[in-house]
Image 1 (spheres, rainbow, N blue to C red):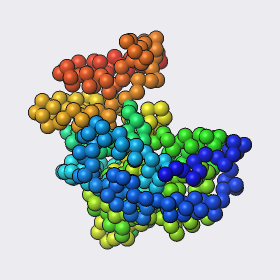
Image 2 (cartoon, one colour):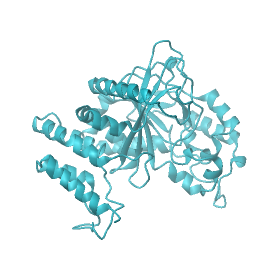
Image 3 (tube, helix red, strand yellow):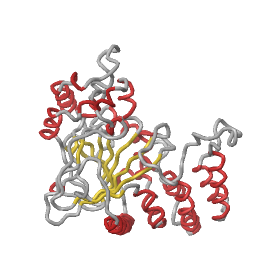
Image 4 (cartoon, rainbow, N blue to C red):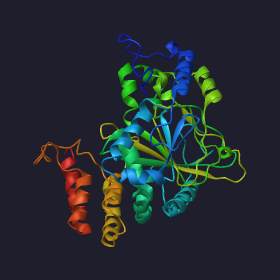
Length: 398
């Protein structure tokens, strides 16, 4: 399947304007694509035009070096030219790590609530509970839980399908209590976090590029029946080129509300979607479901992540856990690589090339390469800390 309209209608249309957007064109694009949609090869089902994958069936595919690229290509095509979203049922074989992470997150929420809490992107402050930079907080609070949580090849595969290697994993935890109201339809970071006036200043090709720099995901930490308000999704809406300037318009939001899809999730399921997909968290209409999701925001090595993390502290925190679990054969090479990818910086730049020149290649060693070497050579924690401090010095501007 190929996109109906991934590029501006003509090369003369260099900038998008909110006033020029057409909800009729938007609707035609989506409805035509929905009518043409077919279940992708590896998908187990198609629900509301959204491909649903059974990870129990996919794990042998991901472990097969010949077949893995075929699956990743399919996911990339879904995100770019297809529905723009896919669901991974049973992304976690064992949900024990999710339960343990949930306990840590609930403790963090209690402590942060005592300190006054904070605002949300698209909901009233205090309406939900949100943990900013949950990635670093979980890593430093409970590195053993962090390792078990992110030693998941399925998450790596989804990220690499869209972004390739050396991506940056960040996350924010969101809890919507019973009665928690829905968000309004929106697009996400980067251009989705600008005002219309700001977004209109970027040329049309940057609007296309923006969606290629980030992957949005969510891991279900609780069962999420539709009544609890799992994310409302508008399949194929990422294919409307002008969407970053159109999504605030009342007629586009009205179309979204009349046509969105919601899929129930079970604890341990995950979904991934293009940041250009029109989406919104739903209203929790239950009396007793505390809907918790870990919202993964994965950034390309070639873009800027939304959150800044102290990845040096994270590497030092997980290293003794990784070393011990590898020694006791509790992690294989693939799982170890998954944790390192979710923790350490994978891209060597920017750096200070006077202090940190390339040696034996085109780029200096990245933080991920240093952490991998420390594990392979059985360094002490002090050796790794020294190497990471040296890397920070060589990356510094002064």
